[in-house]
Structure formats: structure tokens, C-alpha cells
Image (cartoon, rainbow, N blue to C red; front, side, top):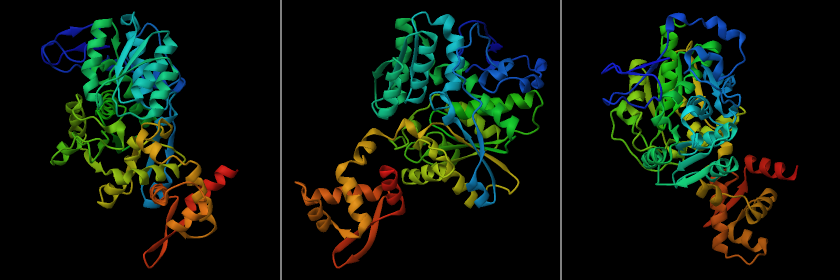
Length: 444
């Protein structure tokens, strides 16, 4: 492993900062001429299978991350395209960040006498909590106020310290920097840790071994994963394992689009989105992500919040439960296909970065919780179509009839009921097929 500043040529041999003292970004390189990829084939699948292209560490802290499945997508067959899904939900804590944290924690053990710290919108925090516990070290996690409750539960379960700070992860990064300096912690924040990014690039190595894709579609908040995967393929080019760089395609939410908007030449937005994992207003690795897109002749796609449920449902039909921040890849694929972006013989890889078990935004989960009254309404509508006031009478509960319409609106949003017909001013609701299956599941 070598770290030399491309600008001032300063060499770093111990603790590696995210940037050189001259301000230039640092890149880790290796003795590429000595790499023999045939050695990888006889090793167990996972991040550390590719150790010749990973930083040197004295001790590996691993939970068997990486080696995730690559599935042929049924959706692709319906579209007449070769589409494959890289399912990163199968990592130990349910997200791609386990790759980064395994490498960062393994390397950082020598500098983490007092523990580790990370600023994260959830996934990297949960991952650090698990790996620090494995290493027997303290973990400090700086997370925004807009975060899914399930991620907080996961972080707390591993015994990490949780610090809520700011609305988005952007604000927490400088706070984590201060904690690292003040408490003597090793900082594994993705935007601050070029060592950890090396772990994420192993996605590219696995894709090469199984598919050698022509296009890679990546949901992106900070841009670090997109860049990491690009760096992995760039190294494969360097060692002559591949002849051509796949096109890197960034997917962002319309509400928060600092990277994609620059690629598309439109005005960026920086508003909260239901895909909270993508809510990064001012990504520090934006320049690296743009480099990956430009150098690979890639592109960008924006996805609306109203398209997230479609993405989640179509991935579920593939047998994958993904969080909204991952579900954006499916609407992006559909949009590009409709524009004629792909050729029939292209090999398209979709990166599902995180599990749906991490949960949707907490306010949405509370709003759409399927509790007693909603279940009673579903059971009534499973027998026949009814209108609001009629449902209120049938419930025979001390409940204002206006509240029934709120329950109906929320059940309709979830796709469990739908408008059957109208008679005058009355709207009659009926249960959907999804609603019937939901009831069947509860009674099974």
C-alpha cells in the first residue's frame, strides 16, 4: 500500500488523513504489477479475499462481510435486458457499509485506544457499532435527528453511544471531527476515511468475478460508494483483468440531488426525502463521484418520492426487501430503459445497498402502523365495499367519524384498500389483493 499526494508528492506511511496537508485529496495505490488474481479464486468469498488490494492491517476485524449474492432480475427478463441485482442487504448489519467499516476498524485499531467515532445517517453507524463491539472498543455514533427508528435500535443494541446532532449527516461530520480530536478516537466517517473506502471497492471485484458488467447503477447520497466501486474497476483495468470500464450511473432523490443535478445540468435541491439514506445536502466526496461518472462516461437519474413505493414493491417481487434509499435504483432503471439508454446485450448491475428492515422514516411508520382500528376496517372491507359513515357505524367504537376517513386515507396510501365506486357524494372503498394477502398473513 502506498499513499502519495498527487499534488505535492508527500508520502504518508502511518495515520492517513482524508486530504493531504496541501489540501489535495489522497488516493491509496498498490504494487499493481505484483497482483496475481488467480490467488483470489481459492479463497473464501468476502472483502478480505482481495487482501493484496486492501490496506495492510495487523489484525482483521471481520463479521464475514462481502461475498453477497448476485441475482438475475426477473424484471430484466420482462424488459428484454440482462439485469442483475447485487444484494448488499446480506451483509452482517444489513448494508454495504460493513465493507467499509471492517477495513477501517481493522486498520484503525492501532490508533483507536479510546475507541472509534462516525458521523452517519444510520447505516455506517450501525455497522461501526457492531464492529467496534466485535473489537472490544467504544463506539461513538453521531446521527441526525432525521433518522429511522429501526436504525437507532440497531445501533443501541450493539452498545454504541448515540449522539443526535443536526438535521442531516452534513452537520454531524464536523462534530465527529471534534470528538475524534478531543477524545482521541479513530474517525471512520466515510467522507473522512480513505482507508475505509477501499473496503467498499470490493463490490467491483465481486461484480467482475461473476458478471463483468457494462453498467452499474448506484443509489447515492455522499457519493463515496459510487466512487469506491469506480476505483475498484479502475484497478481492475490497471492490472489488465478487464479491458473496459463499466458506465457508472448515479441515482439520487429529486428532493436532494447535489451530485445528479450537476451531471444533468439542472438546479440542485437539498430538501428532506423519504429516502433518508440519500439525504446528504453537501457531500464532501462529490468531486470524487463526479470524477467516476465523467471518467466512465456514465450518467445520472433523479427519482421522485412518489416512485419509492414502486421501487420497493418491484424489488420485493425479486425476493429482496430494500430500504427506500436503495429502492430508487428500480425507477432509475425503468427511466433509462424507456429512453433507450441500454443495448440488448448490455449487462446491467443494480446495487441494493441496505435492507428494508432498517425501516422507513419513523414518522411514516407511526402514521401507517397497522393497529386495531385499521385491522377492523380491513376485515369489514374484506366482506363488502362500504363508505366512511357506514364503516364508522359498523365499528361501534367511541371514535369520531372523521377519524375513520383518516384511517381510510392511510390504508389507501399503503395500497391495502382502494376506491371501488361512487354513488352520489359517497365514496365506497374495497380491499385490494394486497390487503387480502395482508389479512391472510396475520391469520396464518
